[in-house]
Amino acid sequence: METSTGFKGLLKLIEGSSVYGSDIQSLVLTVTYDTADIMHVTITDANKQRWEIPQSIISRPTATKKPTASSMKYKFSYTSNPFTFEVTRLSDGVVIFKNDKPLIFKDQYIELTSSFDANAKTYGIGESTRLNHALQPGHTYTLWAVDLAAANEQENLYGSFPYYLQTINGVSHGAMLLNSNGMDVSLDDTSLTFKAIGGIIDLYIFAGDSPAAVVSQYTSIVGRPQMMPYWSLGFHNCKYGYSSLQQVIDVVANYSAAQIPLETQWMDIDYMQDYRDFTTDAKNFPMDQVASFVNTLHQKDNALFLW
Image (cartoon, rainbow, N blue to C red; front, top):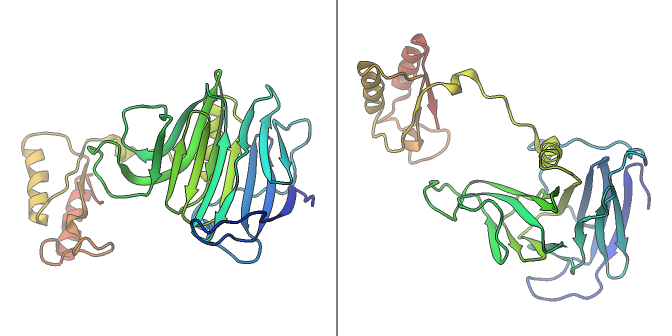
C-alpha cells in the first residue's frame, strides 16, 4: 500500500523454527523515503507494540512527503516470496543494502543481513578499542556498553553505535540499525549481519556517496556534534581513585604551587556513595564542603566537574 512518504506492507511467516524461540507470525513493513539520500525501513510485530528508541531520547526528523523523483539518489526494490529487499544507488548502480538472506524475527532475537561486493571496506560499529580502522572479515563485533578503561584492547567501552560506513571502489554509503538492545554484528567477506536480542528493525540507509556525505546523513538523524565549550579547551586534570575531597583540594593547591595551569579539575565516581548515581559519599565528600570548594574554584575562574 502506498503512503505519502513511501509504502507499507504485511509480512507473513513462511517457515518457522524453534531455534531462538517462537517466531512472530505477522510483521508490518514500513518503507519511508526520508530524504533524497536517506531511506528508512522499519519492521515490527503487526499485532503487539515492541520496544523502540523513543523520540524523547533521540529525536529524529519525520518525513512528511516523498522527495521529488528527479532528486532521488536511490531505488528500493523487493521480492514478495520469500521477502527480500535491496537499495540501489542510482548514480552508479551499486547495491548499497541487499537483504537476500532469510529474515529472522522473534521476541528476543532478530537477524538481518546485507550482502555486498568482496572489495568493500567496512568501518564503524563502535565503540570499542581496536588498532585497525577497517573492520576485519571473519570477526563478530559485540555491542554491549560497559564501563571499561580504554587501555583494554578489543573491548567494549561506554557507547554502542550500530552504524557502519562502507566504501567500494572509492565510493561510500552506510547504514544504521537504530536498536538499543545488545547485539552482535558479524562481518564476513561478502556480508554483514545484525543479530539483536530484542526491539525492532529500525534501519536507516545512507546513499553517500563520499565518506563526509555519509557521516552528514547519519548525523542528520542522530544529531550533529555539539560545539565544544570554551572552557574545555584549557588544561584539565582527572583521575579515578581520589579517597576524599581533601585530596582533591590538595591536588588543585599543588598545581597552583607549582605554577601549572589548571582550568578544570575532575572527580570520577569516587565521590558517589557506593558508586550509586545521583549520590555523594557523605563521609569522604560532604556535599556542603564540595559546594564550598566549587565556589572557591569559580572565584578563581576554575571549574570542578563530577564524572
